[in-house]
Image (cartoon, rainbow, N blue to C red; front, side):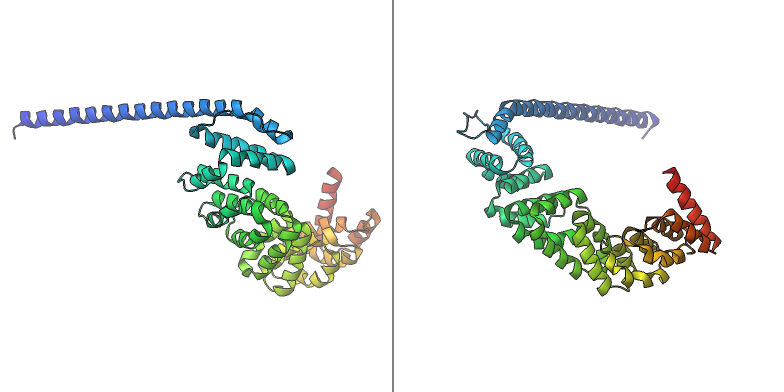
Length: 354
C-alpha cells in the first residue's frame, strides 16, 4: 500500500465515522424530542382527566344520594383517574370511603388494578396495590402477599398497607416478619400503618416478634417501637432486659425507651458496666424516671472517665423529681472529683442560658 492509498483510507474512515456520529446525534435528538412530546401529551391528558373528574369525585365523597352522570372514561384515562381516586381516598373515612368504592367498582378499578399488578413499572404496581387496598378486596390477598416480599422496599410497604386495610388481624404477623428484615421501610409511614391497624390488633404480634428475634436484630427496632407505641416499647424493653441483660447492645437500646420508674433499682448495677453507651444511657434513663433516691448513683456517674457519661449524669441530676437549687448545692458541696465538679458547673451554666 503506497502513502496516497493509506491517506485516502484514513480520510474515508474519518468521514464515515463523522457520518455515523452525526446520524447518532440526530437520532438522540429525535428521541429526546419524541420523549418530551410524549411527556407533554401525558401532562395535558392528566390535567384533562383531573379537570373532568376531580369535582365529581369530591361530590361523590361528600354528598349522599344518587351518583351524578359520569363522563366517558377511555382506557388511557384510567390510570390518571385511579391516582386521583386513591389520593382522595387517603383523606376520607366511613361513608365517603364506601361511596368512592362503589364508584370504583362501577368503573372497573378492581380489574384494572389486577392488570396493572403485572406491570414491570414500579409506579403502576404501587398504583394497583393502593387501589386494591382501598377497595378492601379480599380476593387480592394472595397477590398482595406475593408483593409483600418484593425486593422493592416501596412495593413491599404498600402491599403491607393494603393487607392491613383488608384484614389487619390476619396481616399483622406476616408484616411484622418483614419489619424485622426491612430497615428501608419508611419509619413514619410504618408507624401510621400500625396505628391504622389498631392497637389491639398490632400490639401482641409486635410483642411476640420483638421477643422472638435474634438479639442482633433487636436494638435498631426498639427506638422504632417506642415511636409507634411508647408503652409497648417500654414493656418489651423491660422483658428484654430480663432475658438479655448481658447483651450490651440490647441493654443500651432498652435503657432509652423505659417508662416505668419501678425498674430503676434493677438497673443500678449497669453503672459499673464496661460499655460507655450503657453507662451514658443509664444516666439518661435516671434523668427521665428517677427521683432523689438516685442522687448517689448520678454522683458516681458524674466522675466517669468518659465525657458523655459525665455530661448526661449531670443533666440527669438536675432533672430528678424533687431536686431543688438547694439540693444541687448540697451535691456540689459533697463532690470531690474535679471532673464531676467541672461538669456540674458546665451543665448548670447551660441550663441558665437555656
